[in-house]
Length: 177
Image 1 (tube, rainbow, N blue to C red):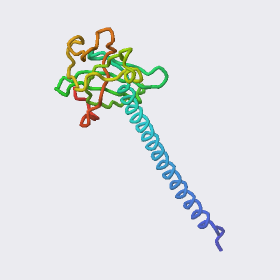
Image 2: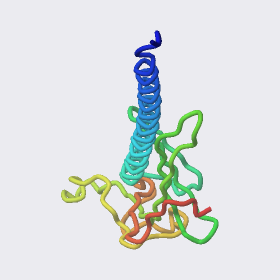
Image 3: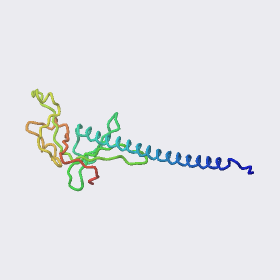
């Protein structure tokens, strides 16, 4: 009789082990790709919300009416710039978020109007409660010279720059130039 008994079983077991190993390697690769995708989505969402937070913070600041003025939050990674659009969009507030050495920051744009911010008069108790009360209800694009845009009764020494108001139709996720 034959001395090679059971060699078919050993060969079948080796083939089954090889197929299982290939299946486990392909599952591991699929899992690795899924984790990389989840990590990229997390970085994008962080950058997106950081850019939105930058815009919100920038809207709360007083600005000089100068093109290209940028500000960095002192404690948070927020960066925002005020600029005039070259394509006729008016004033734009650019919020940045994310940004690494390998990828540029995610940028969101918001069309804004500038309004004169004036310090309150000492005898006005309502204005004293709100030190940056707006005195110019209409948006100015681009603003006139500060002396020409002063509200009634305001003196140039009480001007605190401009505060921004977001336009309701002004959210942009592309660079308008």
